Length: 479
Image 1 (cartoon, rainbow, N blue to C red):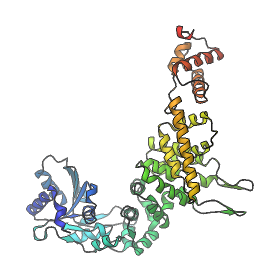
Image 2: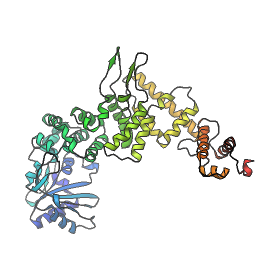
Image 3: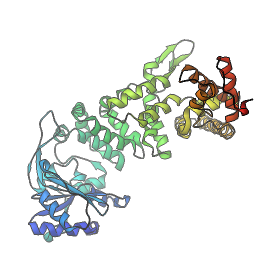
Image 4: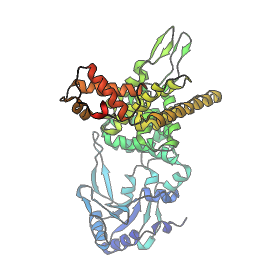
């Protein structure tokens, strides 16, 4: 493979010239080199990192001045780095450095160093690769730790003693598992042992940084690989103890239940080919977390998990808050999907009422299709006959729902009569009667007592008002 083919973007020539002007050695490093060697560069990588033996900030300023219409140059003096965007690519330049760490922080003490020093501080051998931009060896691969060999061996390995690498910056443990999941690589045995040994140090890393890596694992083709590695390494109990609590199979009087942890991993894998919605994947991950606190055994019914969906939906908010996750629409969405996750199953009966279908449509609203996607992913039985029957049943529910939706239009339901109109009709101010009438109209529509249209709702409103001893200001249409 000709490495000079990696250097076709116009930025490389500008950086080469600027480095020569300043008398500094410069190299392109990290993920850009790794992805080129893996032939993943066509996936649309939008960032390139450079290291220079000298001032990264001075080099960035010189490069920036030579380019046409770059974005604003951002400088981080403490770390000797600078970055900007040009031609749709995020460019970062840093001076070569060596780092040392204190035990209670992942923020390093930084000092100037050589290219080799800089490569030693990298997290993995496959990220310590560098391509020279210098005249004497332009396009040559600098690979002191056989990172190229580890790419061929599909191996995640640290350049130095893994105990040092992971203890210094515990976030690298998450990154090791994330890269193994994304790239379908193995983590080298000593390295994985070291992650297990240092797992507790993940607690010194900010929740935001941990979840950034976790989210990337969740968005891989097969998230269960990373989720299982997190559990095997002892990291999951520090991140999602609610998920770990689902592990294990108990037996009472010869009756057992399934391992809900491994079932959950299957559900996440099942749903992933069908959605890139990270929050739907989260709903799949958390849909059974209420089963641990609600697990009970009695002789008549065996193992039960009554109301686990409701309990689980309540747990979601605390979990999101603890992990510094978004507490707006994302958490509300996940809570709703978790709460409704078993509802479609109860509608499989051929004799299910239209009102039950209307209520599910009303509660799920615009997220109904996502709910059904989760329910289908929740089918993890290995019995092909059962699996086929379950899928056919869900198809039947979807068909019934579609018929009800076309007829009654209750998805994203909005009351045909507003609160303002109720107040105007009876000449009243805001009061509990307004809410009573609105709720009664909604219930009547969902139960099929009246049609979902304005005339039917207004007529029903007038009748309700009279029962509440409200005197309507009648329009001719109400006579």
